[in-house]
Amino acid sequence: MHSDIQITDILSTSDWLIKNKQNIQSDIEITEISEAELKKISSLSTPNKVFAIATQPEFSYNKGEIQNELSLILDNINDPGNFGTIIRIADWFGIKNIFCSNESVDLYNPKVVQASMGAIFRVKVHYVDLEAFLPQYSQSESFNIFGTFLEGKNIYNENLSNNGFIIMGSESHGISESLKPFIDKKLYIPNYPGNIKTSESLNISTATAIICSEFRRRT
Image (cartoon, rainbow, N blue to C red; front, side, top):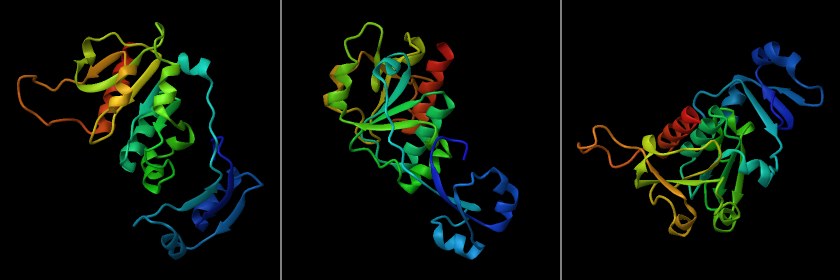
């Protein structure tokens, strides 16, 4: 209710309404429902006390602003739980924009919305043709495109910036071959200790959190 998303309807139990009705804008339609009705509507085994119906926003972006910010690029992300968690991570680390390939999971998949824990209302998610989008920002001395690779360089030893793109590849295939030519720096999160065999890779949302944290820590 405190975001820029336009809410048209609220359906909630009586106890939630008693606590929150004074904060609901007058143009929002309010419907009181029972616990039984709540469970019928929800796909969760333990639903919350309230549902909201809202309009899907059409996000825009300014190229000049993007060039001065740090943004995430998601290449063919398929798991809705991972996607929602990444949106939440972006929100935590002050990343305002996420650019997704057109083949990535739908932003409004219920599991994405749930995993984002409200961050979906603050982070702008754009679906673009990455092969046409990235050339607009490549070959710039003041704007780097970072990519995550198992054969990349140790992120803790590399120079990082407070602007640029961080590309995260799909859970199963990594970054697409067609996008690799646009990448200026390949980054890798090292395992510890380095001479011991560990898991083959990190979950993509976990890796995103580590990378975003290191960028913010140093810039």
